[in-house]
Image (tube, rainbow, N blue to C red):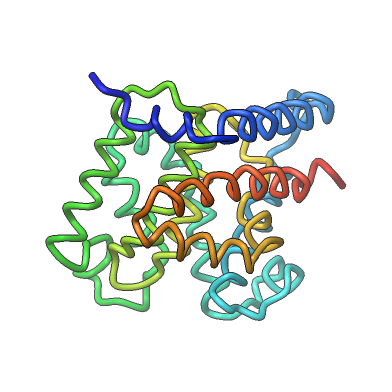
Length: 238
């Protein structure tokens, strides 16, 4: 069976960039005492991620406001996703479509009609989601962070749901990182990495959406930097 992601890893600079980023994440987790981390630190990481993801949707809620439950509607949607995210790890491993649908149902609750929650907006979007699910279930030698970056960008550019696609895409990226063993306790904050590099994030997503190899290449190189920044935003750094 052909590895669908192997050609992406072979693009110039991708393998070395992701190896360096993964090494940095591993060192940070190990040096900060991964075995001694607490559920509270995981919860804080998820909360920071929710606030950052909401900010990328133009929420103006601060981390303190979100922590106090006083954030705006977008921030509340993001927090609702974060509270159930880790429960979806086994679902993503075996039934990615169900995981994507649940992420959207959580994000869009109270915004869309119940019958629209978790449902693709068109037959074409449903087909693209099936393709992404098959990609996740296929064997690959690609680094887990590369898989996470591709899942994120595909969900963003396909925008398969009627709303909240950004929140879903960034939550799915974090979910892949947990499910594939990069950050099993979800202590890094990839969403904050994207917020730190917001201009590059948005421009590289536009390039990815163009469908050309140059855009995909640029997105992957950007992603390695964003994941590194997300590690710096971990509560373990405090």
